[in-house]
Image: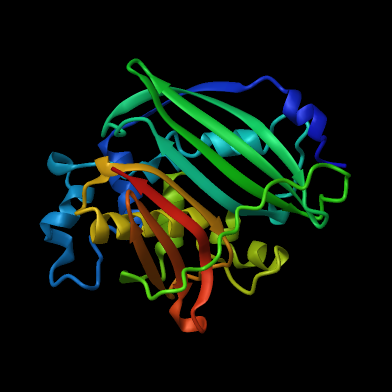
Length: 290
């Protein structure tokens, strides 16, 4: 069996030093649609968008943690002891990020990564890859990635917790429409996720898709930006944590309908693809904020 759960869980954490500067942050923000909002008359020079694109005004969305250091934490997890999988069988099942303080525009940190859990979903195995980042001032963020590996379940392990939450019974308080550009995946992958599933039609076909799909983490970032701009006044420092479950694929060229329900210090979100009968692509999604 390519995944040895006992060996993966017992492996020593991997430690590495990562660094980033304003160019990495700007590239990430452009990759999730900054400067291209359809609801603004001149989005490329809009003051709200310049907070994501202009170095003299720059702030950092916490979802940047998923690509800081060119995404090396997740890549390391998929090559951890006891883990030997085919990328064509890998899907991102869920993601969470908790920030302990605002992420600086320029920084350096030590990341510690490990396989925190291995679950048996019968038809798939689920790896929980946990990364903690610490700089000279203390903890920066904790990030969990839930990775589905198709065909690797049935080994008799724990099934794991269910994170599904009942859909809201009332209309959303806010709805944001965000188009996915045809070249969105090609731009987003420059931040470090080089999985050919998002660019190579032949590889996508081998993975069971009729064309390359958008990175789930790109949809994740686009959604957090929409929530920040719509509910939090564009202030990323109010975000405390953000989690989601990936429920479907997004294709470049489609439109995301981002539906938001607000409560005390929390925004519940669901994301749907308008062109495919509002197919749900992000569920059980929550942004906790101050």
